[in-house]
Structures are given as C-alpha cells and as structure tokens.
Length: 125
View 1 (cartoon, rainbow, N blue to C red):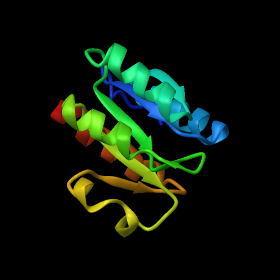
View 2 (tube, helix red, strand yellow):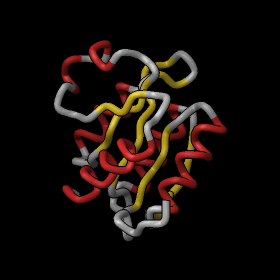
View 3 (spheres, one colour):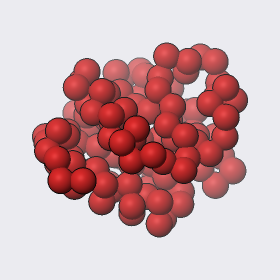
View 4 (cartoon, rainbow, N blue to C red):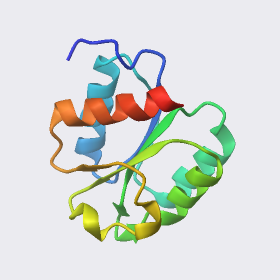
C-alpha cells in the first residue's frame, strides 16, 4: 500500500509472532505511520508504554502473548488514554467484556481492514 493516511501516526506493535509483527510494521510504515517499536513480551511492552506514553498515538495489541493475556497492558493503556486495538486469532467474543468498546482485528489480517482500524484510532488521538 502506498498511502500516507497514517502519516504522523506513531504506533507501537505488541505481537509475539515475529514474522507477523514484521509484516504489520512494514504495512503500517507503507501507509505513512511511524512504528515506534515491536515486542512480543508483556512486561517489556508495559515498561515501554510507561516510559514513552507521551509519544504513542496508538497500540496494536495481541490478546495472547506467549500464553499470557495482554489485559494488564490494556488496562494500562486505558488509564493513560492511549487508543489501541486488539489483534487476535480467537473469536472477538472471547475478549474480556470490560474492553468491549475497543476494536478487534481478527487474524489473519485483511490488510484493508487493519489499515482502516488503525486509521480510526490514530485519528481519534
């Protein structure tokens, strides 16, 4: 995709599948986003967000990180008012109900859908 709709949007990617994280990062950058970083570890993501919350416009958050649910990070993002969307290979209905107002992008990704969802949360921030 060669579009700059995400120009200026700073995105942090939390995904434990390295190849998928790389692919998503390249996709976001091709749409003009700045990918601030990528991690597949919950604790590392929590530290990064705590230290850089003022730089982050949006987070792509895998629900399950190496068999560890990412809800503690989702709670942190809510508290910091950082928009995020969940990514998951599971049914969206399986996500904790308290996060029901956050968008969910199902894996495998449909590129246009992911692009639209990231654009929507970056625009709000």
